[in-house]
Structure formats: C-alpha cells, structure tokens
Amino acid sequence: MKVSIRYPAQLISRNIENRMGNNGIVLGKALGCKEEPLIVMPVNMLYRHILVVGATGSGKTRTTAFIINSLQHAYPYKYRIIVLDWHGEYRSLLKKYVYVNPYNAPVNIIDIKTLSWIETLYDVLGLSDPQAYVLQKVIEKSNIASNNDIRKLYKLIEEMDTENAKWLREVKYALLRRLAPLVYGDNYRLFAGTKDFLKLFKNRATYVVDLSMIRETRIKKIYATFIIRYVFDYALRNCMHDTILVIEEAHNLMRRSNSLEVITRMLSEIRKFGVGVIIVSQSPSGLGDDIMKNTASKIIHSIKSSVDLETISRSLVLDREIISVVPYLEPGEAVVALPNYKKPLLVKIGDLPEKL
Image (spheres, helix red, strand yellow):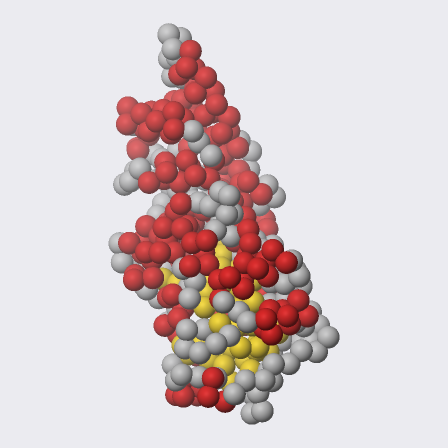
C-alpha cells in the first residue's frame, strides 16, 4: 500500500545548511513533499543516541547499515564503530568492516581494577544480594587478581567452607549454578580474556562482532553486556571518543521488565564523552522508558502491533495522520524524528530496494 503525507515547506527544516549534507549524513528523501528535499541527520546527533525500530523485514537493519556506510564514506577514519551483530547480518550489508569472531576475542570478565564487573554479573545473571555478597567476599580474600581466571574463581567458591552455615551453603550452590555456564565447554573461551579487551578496537574502523556464532541466547546476552560495560568504562576514562556502538536486537538486553542497569546508565551518561549508541529493536513496547527518553533521534519502520504503535505515539506525540500510515510503510520507508526538524517526516531511507 502506497502512503503519502504532504507537509508545508516551512515545516521541513529548521536549518537550511543541513540540507546540503556538509554537517551530517543524508538519510534519504522526504516523501509527499513537492521537491522531495534531502533529509539530513547532523553528526552531533549521533552522540545523543538513535533508536531504529520496526517489524521483521521492515528494513531497520538495512537502515542502520546505511547510516554506518554513510559515515564511512563522508568521514573516513573519524569514527570507531562497534556493531553487536545478533544475527550475523551486517557482513553482507557493510562496505568495509573488521570481522570479530567472539571466540577469538574473549572478554576479561574479571576486572581487577574495579568491582563493577560484579554489578554486571548481578544484572545479567540475575544474582541475589546474598550471592553477590559471597562473590565479592571470595574475590577480596583470594589472589584471583593474579590471573583473572573465571574457572579459578569458580573453584574457590566450590572450596568455600559452609559446613556450619546452612544459609551460606544454599547461597554457595545457587551461585555456582549461575556461574556454571561461563566455565564449561566452549563458553569458557568467551570469558577467558587475559588482556585489555578493547585494544582489539583501537583503530578508527568498523568492527562487526558476530554474536550469531554464539548459540545460547543467555551466553550471547552476557558476552554482549560485557562489551557494552567495557565501552562504558573506557568512555568514562575518556578513551573512547568518537565511538559509535550499535546494539542489534536490543530488546534482548533492555527489556522493560528487566533492563540492565549498565545500559540505562550508559545512555544517560556516555554522550558527554563522545560516544553514541544506535539501538535497533523490533519491539519498542518491550524497551524500557529510559530508552525512549534518552534517544534523541528515532527512525520508525513499519510496525503492526497496536501496543508498539501506542508506545511510539506516546514517545513522539505523533498525530493521527502519521500513526495511521506506520503499519503500511513499505520496506525502507520510515517515519523519522530528528531534533533538527520541526516534526516527524515520512522518509525513503537511502537507496533501499522496494523489497528486501
């Protein structure tokens, strides 16, 4: 179904020079406008974060890849872009990238410089307060810092003397069950990093971390979360300027009912350190309110769910005319809301084909 919305010319842009693309990247053409002006996203919007949503097959991943390719072309060697590729799709969509197999890039899950990694495990493994307490005490009393080995940590917990404390014994075994997936089989290879993990991303280039290589969703989530945490920690130390982090299938990490604190904190704090986040999801209603609040730019592809439509409408204060066309957008078409435009616009993104 073809859709069209017409806008008065004076509503299109607040900033006439942005239409030339000198200070940003061209996303596409506004549909329903007589002259079909180019819609430009200023590059400083990257640091205020972008949300890309849409149903499966609507073009959200292609749109994200288009943004990355445009950045590479317009600003070569300026940005460090890290793509957490949940389904292994970006290798066929990006023009230039460095491929990262997670099994060849293990994260250093135990960080001797800070105990914030315990907070990350607390979030991602769903640890109870007693479990987190026991974990911290084992770290403090051991020499685990000498080699940062998650298996050694697991063994130290196993060897804890709990004979005289039933509650401690129950906490111990529950904690071991939570940690077990990290220490057995191929999973151990993902969490056995012995060097500074983010040195892998030291160059200004695009890195595709192929999370599709990890079969278990739970393990994929843990690995991705630790990458996000490392980016956050490095940013706070002013070591990640001009970095763009792309989080695909973000609803797996940012569920409204169980959003990870490290991610919500990052979105609100990291922009001042020159790091931007592109959040890609098929379920806006499943994302936490902080995601909607902390993403200044929003690109909405076709959405069928009434709950998702209501979430987007509430977030952007969309009028009925716009909302009515969202379910019928064709692949590559999107409602785009950028701070440098006065109202959301219907846009044909880049040069996407009519059918995916």
